[in-house]
Length: 273
Ligand SMILES: C[S@@+](CC[C@H](N)C(=O)[O-])C[C@H]1O[C@@H](n2cnc3c(N)ncnc32)[C@H](O)[C@@H]1O
Image 1 (cartoon, rainbow, N blue to C red):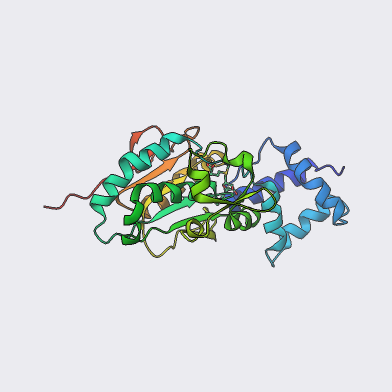
Image 2: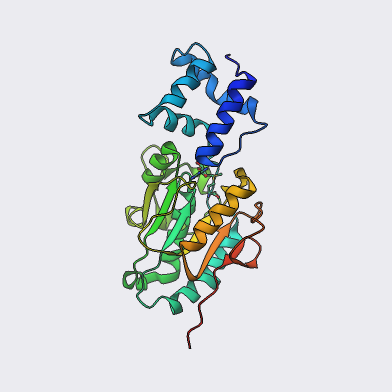
């Protein structure tokens, strides 16, 4: 198995941190084990040879491949149920009152295999029911892993992945495929738009969001990266809108949002006379 030298590892850590915010310090063994087979299979002489290609890659293909291997995409349905409870019991009733044009914007930032945005789409369907057609309810879901995004767009999951899905939702929001896997219904899939977006880059989506979820992503970022990202999120949030972060994550010290409860932040409403 090829081994990565301290020098190569340091360079790789600096490259990934500068471009994607992910801090790989102290994860030398994991990085090595995630890349070794690929390096051998592709006929690179060693890590140095491979990284030279990565650092000079202008096509973006080799870097994308590296990101597919290095990102941690662990996710599941109904992860951190407190967020879904807040979404249904607090966020949506408030949004319903506040959003006069019925254009509700939600962004799942760091969506991995799509469980999070599909879960939100299910909640929206539960909440709005037949009134759904009176609303524009598309969810934007973004990530830097093309593998994760490709898989998310297909919306295919194993039986095990559905174990936390509430009773009745499996029949309502999934169809069983011949191979025993489950696919999110076309109707629900049409509510989610998957796109590549690197959270280190400026946010240039046309409209602001009523809710941004960035859960279990910033855990890999250092304080200054988190601080800059939360400022960008704040700018991209509607007044009175929310940010959900993971319960295991800490907000930066200069968090511009107001903390409502654990892992739930609000951008204050602007009072008009
Ligand atoms: C652990 S998953 C979290 C998925 C989901 N939000 C959840 O809580 O279950 C973290 C995701 O963040 C993505 N990610 C990491 N750095 C990113 C960046 N700079 N821009 C966008 N996505 C990023 C990874 O590719 C990965 O899919």
